[in-house]
Amino acid sequence: MKKIVATAALMLAAWAGPAIACDTCDAKTKTAQHAPMPHAPFPPGMDANHDGKVSLKEHQAFMDGMFRKVDANRDGYITPEEMDAFARKQMEQAMKDMKAKLPPAPPKCVQDGNCSQPGKAKAERAARK
Image 1 (spheres, rainbow, N blue to C red):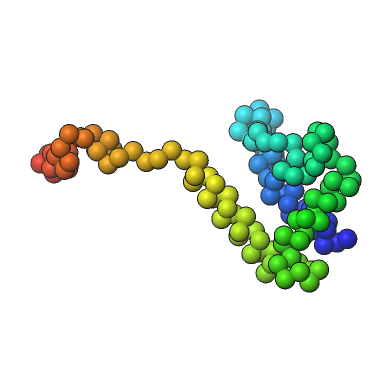
Image 2: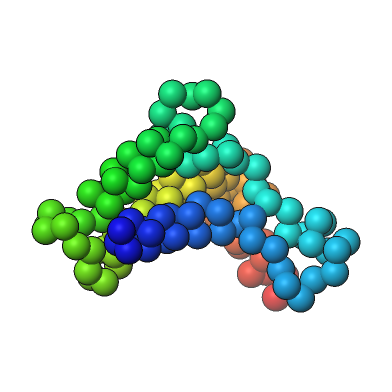
């Protein structure tokens, strides 16, 4: 049971982290700068029957699945190394997903302001020095 509670706490912290309020901020600052990020009310997959609420069985099934994902060697225990590897994998995937959503960088000619003659802007800058 302690394994499930520990896994639940970790997953909840990772999922709800942006919604945790700042203890050193006043009420106005909390709402303006520390408003929760808009997201689904539950982690994906937790509300298995999509009724807008999570039953004890749904929660247990979700956490059992999370435990199995973290327990890499399937021995029924999560070691610090397994937890670290899982967290790293999750972070790497999140970074990959974020990078995929970024717009492409503008071409070099747009950045230096001269698309008609490559290298001309660089030569002009050098001449001004």
